[in-house]
Length: 231
Image 1 (cartoon, rainbow, N blue to C red):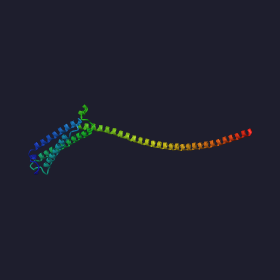
Image 2 (cartoon, rainbow, N blue to C red):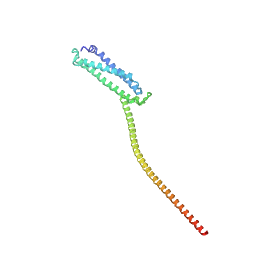
Image 3 (cartoon, rainbow, N blue to C red):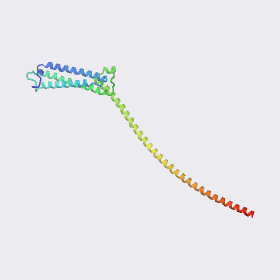
């Protein structure tokens, strides 16, 4: 009880108004953040930090108010009907927090959907300008799904290309083996031809020697015959 500000009890309408004004200010900043994101602006760290800080402060204040007006801590001098009314007002602030955080999350998702895909000079179409945050998010999700499909198709083509390249590699290996076998056959044939040529040359050489001897013998016989006739 001692840590709860007295104004929570003595000036509840003013505290409530401050919280409602804070909620309006956060929504305004989220709207500005959404416009920057939709325009493709990537440097939004400053406004994000402000929104994060404001939401935290809002939630902290709401938590203190809930604690102050819990059945355990609420002053007994506050009439039951008034206590119920104030508790309902605090509950509404809780709904505001949920709505604000949901809206902020949608814009953040939109930012990351644009990130790396939209240039800084991105301009919304007339149709997009009339869309809500959720509709813009759906639009960006559709675009991302389309890009994912294109990437999947490219990946499939690459896989097919790898299969074809692998098959071509096998074919080339088979052809190289066939060429190697053919080269071995050519080498064997060449070796046989070289042996045949050498044998032929040896044969010719031997045949030439015999012819020379025969010619010499014939010449000797002819000379002897002429000598006998002349004697």
